[in-house]
Every structure is written in structure tokens, then in C-alpha cells.
Image (cartoon, rainbow, N blue to C red):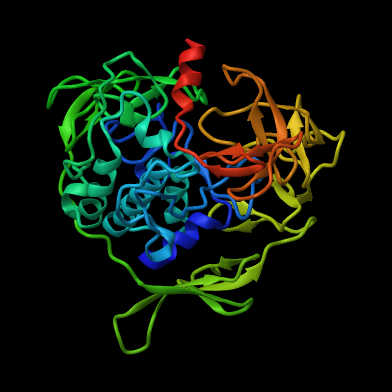
Length: 432
């Protein structure tokens, strides 16, 4: 687990990890063990971007505290908002900053209570990209003071309860009833928002079953402490604290990897390979060795799933080079093409340039089919049409054609300035 002091850095930029509904907080509408899990979650999950937008990912929030004349939500350890109520000065964003601090506190405890790697932490913190809408859209039971007051209860919540989806009382339910439009679960009485269809950013609130009552993944969620099994809410049994090995380290090609027990003791060390390598386990051996991923023409590596070196994919006959523009997309878990291309109508084509069409997501600025460094920005009130734009971060220049400010900021005076504007649910209302 990343130390708390490092999570501010995680919010400012980390390796891309594309995980829809990671860390047990599934996206609104996905199938969950307990669909009422009330943590910080966007309609379509999120990916963490390093220093900007990435293909098929999303831009993570930059963290930090907004200032105001009457006080501020100040930046604490790691750049997290830790207290105070911001004033009304132009360019301040107390709601956004408090939302981000809440998300980080939630993620810290989520990983502590359930176990998980730095990658799970990164995916969790990526939810902050949708702040302040994530926790303060219309129908939400949260307020600025509630978010600030909830940070410490989240950090110290009982882990046994947490694993049973029983969270502190400050994690409040929304006011929207069964069937009402929603973009985030914080808006719903059941604390559960379902998508209208796979991939749709706007959904409807699930109803809340009685303890032990009938349930389903589509429209009825179970109460805290229960999950849906066989169309009936059942108690989530208590579980033990996760067992964590000693902190992991990375080793070079040819060195031992995996879970390694030290000589003459019971301590176990989790040893990872350096980036670009994988842990190969020789037949009959419980200890792995770091190897380079195979190039085109070589047999696929048996990693967590059959894998090949960058620029190649695993076919039934072994590793092959990814197809180039105009060639048929490589088949697999999802169609694949060489870097800078995407699959459309079964053929590899160049990613879209500035101004070209893309499919937008009203909950965040995602890259969609845009070139590296670009994001897909809404072009109409319903956010059904999009165009690829350059992403401008908080404090950087904006106003030029082909430039859009990151979520949680607005273009004022030629710069992207912090903003508490709530926009996502308005788009979903337009779609009704």
C-alpha cells in the first residue's frame, strides 16, 4: 500500500491503469457483490493518466487546495485538502477540493482494509477526476462540511465493517428514489446507480431491498452488510484482515521473482520484475525468474495471461507484430492495432486529430479515439457529439480553438481556473 503522504503524488500523475469499477467499487450499473457499496465511484469508472490524457484512459485530477478570502480548504500532506471552509473569491473551488480529499481518505482505507497494490490505489484515486460532481450532484446527501467532517472517520473506519460494506454514518445516502436519473451513486437513496445499458454514462437509481429481501443486479440493491446471491440479500460474513507480505521490490532480468521466503525465517517478500519483464516459473519450480517478453516469432509468455513484447500480440501460433493502418485488427480480448491506431469496422486506422469526431463521456474528459495528448470534449448539450481537443491543466492557458480545460476548472481570463460548477447531471437530464 502506498503511504498516505504519497497519495497526493498519485493524484497528480501516475502510470496508466485502465480499470472499470476497480477496488470493489464497480461503476454505476455494473454487477457488484453488493450493489449498494457507497464509495466514490463514477458512472464509467476511470483510468489514471500521467501528465495528460492517454488513449482509452482519462485525466486524473491534479489535487491541491483552492483559496478564498474567507479561509481555504488548505493543502495538507501530499497536497490533500484537510480543513477549513473556503471563501467566495473568484477561482476558488472548495467543493471540488473537499471532494478530492474525501476520495483520497476513502481510497487509503479501502486499500488498508481489503489489501491491494499501488495500482489499485491509483485506480481508486482516479475517481477524483469527476469531483465535485462525483459527490455533490443534485440529489446528493453530502455538503462541503459533511465531506470535510467525514475525512477522519473514513481514515479510521473499522476494517471488519468496511469489508462488509458498512461504512461510517457520514457516508450519506442521496435523495433520488428508485428509477430516478443519476450519474453517480451518491445521488441515490440506495447509494446505487445503474446504467441504462452497457457503457452508458447516465443511469437510474436502483431501489433498496429490505434486509433478506429480493434483489437483482439491475434494479434492486441490498442494504449495507448484505449482498445479492441467488436473487436474495444475504449477510456478508466477517473476514480476516488481509495478509500483506513485506514491501515489494523490482529486480532485473535473470533474477528471482515472485513470493520468496527468506532462508531460516518465515518472512515472505513479494519480488516483482522491472518494467518490460515478466516472472517466468519453470515447470515444477515454485520460484520464478525475470525474463524479457517474447518478440514477434517467439512463443507467447505465460504470464497472468499469454503476453508478448510491446508492439506484438499473442496469436494461436505465437507472438505476431501488431497490424498497421489498413490491415485487419488483431483479434483477442479486444481488437488491437499498432501504436497510434485504433480498430474501426475491423480495420486499423489512425487516431483522431484535433477537431476530429470522437465519442465523449459527460463524467470526465477521456481520450476515446483521440491521439495521445488529446481528450474528447462534448460538443452539444447532451454530450452525444464530441471532438478531440488539447487538454489544458489548471493554471495553464486556454481560450484558443482546440483547447479544453480539465474537469473541475473553467476558462477565465485566458487561464483554466478552479471551479465548483456541477455539470454532469445536467447533461443526463438533457438526455431524458
